[in-house]
Length: 101
Image 1 (cartoon, rainbow, N blue to C red):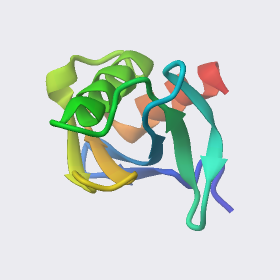
Image 2: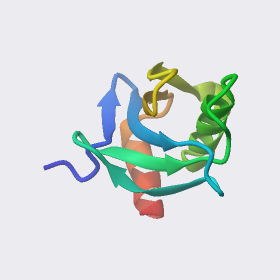
Image 3: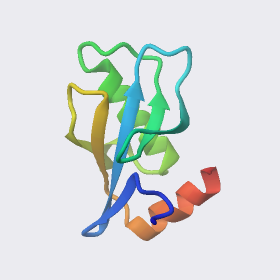
Image 4: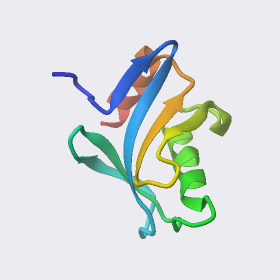
């Protein structure tokens, strides 16, 4: 079994599966959720006018120490379940995730 099933390698990039809980009191990672597992992230923004998506991209870019332009939403623009693409090699993403978790 993979150590972080919500983190997947792609060609020179990393795919991150997330479950978003908008309209929370603070923005933070709170664990994993669902099957397949997704990283659960609570965010302060409301899910309207793309504000929640902007906050997710900004928060994930800080976690993985990349610019916001290097994080994109592949699937789930209007869903709580989102698949993000991070322009960062999988090996580097794993190192950063291990520092956090």
